[in-house]
Length: 345
Ligand code: NAD
Image 1 (cartoon, protein in one colour):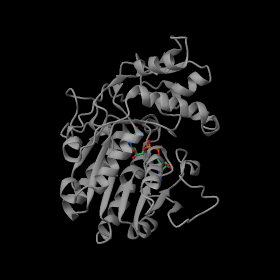
Image 2: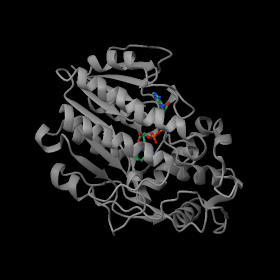
Image 3: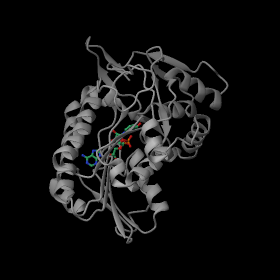
Image 4: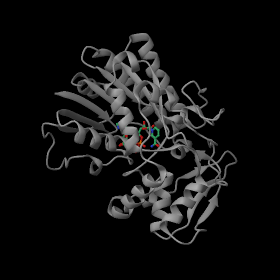
């Protein structure tokens, strides 16, 4: 029986990945380590931990990735590690950036140190980085060689973590693979993120808040596709992936305004139900993924197309109001701009 440690497994992508592994690999033992910050919830896990702490296949550890002793104990038992735990919201990083550097950089260091220490046991360490490390696209589609120009404290912290893992591979030869997902969407995403915020605004008959003119564009990939890519990187032959960086995205970018239009046209008849608010400081203007490397090396390609993915997400939020009602107050994040203006983003 293989043991897999998933950090941040009570958050959005981490919980989708925990469900994916739980369903796909009945012979794997899953350990989830999560601090349960505002972004994590035990409701997201694939088993009801009120009923069972250890059902033989699944254990939940409510702890911090900065706790080196606990991290060491869990890593020592693990064949595979997938490290999602992070502070993940760009806007929050504008007013509370210390926490981002602590969790995202030093938390990753704690995991990487433990992987180093237990290298005889650990077969693969997947570090979940992000496309935000690139900053605004300097070329059409961005491949893994695109310069790293992080534009927000979140992106800078993730760039630090990304290069930290690379340096540990280069220095200590740890079995690390770095995945850079582009923007993810899917079930159980926190309401602070744009797609759930828009969908729930329509359900509540409120205006959608669009940053700036809404022309900044992102490459959105469904979490099911991301989970499949991570699975492939986890199980690929070592010489194909260790020490490598892989982008995971759809290859298409769409503007935030066009996303507002797509959501409103699926969900309501009033085509003008959005308002424009101030632009987000440190805004990335465009991200478009070049996923050629992961396609060539692992044969991965996105499967969930935008229309289908968006309909699935709208259905999920429509059917799970109890899950998201309690986080409504977190949809707007107050920030102070460089000019000293207070804005709700
Ligand atoms: P999320 O905010 O939904 O979940 C993060 C999880 O980490 C939460 O469950 C939280 O409780 C946990 N956590 C936070 N600090 C912790 C700590 N100190 N110790 C232990 N657990 C802690 O984030 P997400 O959107 O699921 O993102 C997961 C990972 O994927 C992050 O590393 C993020 O940078 C990366 N990523 C996200 C996206 C996206 O679009 N959501 C895109 C690219 C990369």
